[in-house]
Image 1: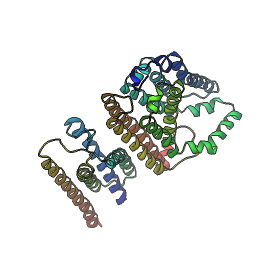
Image 2: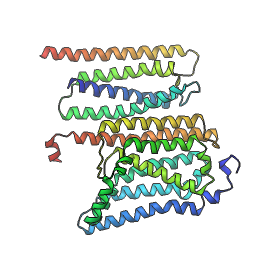
Image 3: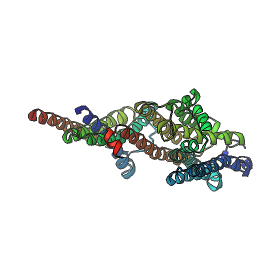
Image 4: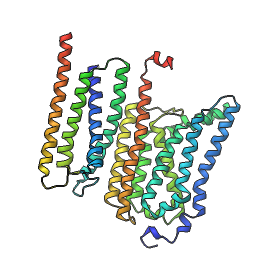
Length: 146
Length: 266
């Protein structure tokens, strides 16, 4: 029950962050490029696989949530903690592995890119910490109630 | 005829009347069979839901629109239109037709003896092989890789036979791919949700990666600007249609896990 709340949340968190990334940075701001000429071959492959996984994670995470609600075993704090953790993990993976190592695309095509990279990655670490704190809070709460 | 497919002098051969009529025939035949089976089922006293009839009409119409008339002709001149046609013929039309449950309707319309024969075919190992998600994905996505990453795309514009075969393959592989993932018709060879999900993730990734490859390295004879808009259309269009299939796949999983009482109630 605990595991299933966490899985549903993490999957939805990863997926929804992928979705926000596409919507905000690719479409609305148009900072990210659809294709970057410095992308490595592995980069195209990893990006494609990750994008596909994110679609499944978003939709699958929500159906898992519906199943938790139907069985009345939904745990609000734990689920939201997992969502924020998943979102942070995606953001950090995107910021370090996809942007920097595989060079899929940069956050924005400007001179002071390092500032954007720092804000991006520190932001994702903050999300991960908040997520972990919420998950711990959910566990402590359980212990108290016994 | 040298190199450039866009102003090929063989226009009359490949997208002339003969080509359009030949490509239209299978869909027209399917259309007539579906309507006939619909009528037969009604005569036997079993109503067939009207929304399924509508889905089937929509699906076959979209397939026809993509191969005949203005879009079919335009598809040979402009790669972006070719890609739009591909999305309709290889993804949206198959999905709509799968949702119309044609096999169930045909089984209803047939006599008991013939229905048994057809069921036997569906249960055969050959049918089991082709409805395996991995096989269907290779035929579908692998076929696209061959089409756009080899000389085939250019050759297709110069040979009527290749043109017909490739277009039928795009539709049939798209249909096979869809029925290997979501179950609306009887499926004797069922695969687990986990298996289907994992294969589907790789298939969707293969589709997305190919779209970006087309964007970055245009197929022979395709101008860069058309390859870029076509590649993006393939990427986002494919994502949207596949998202619908993902929702259906997980919805079927969700229903399969319903507690017994909930099943009784519906």
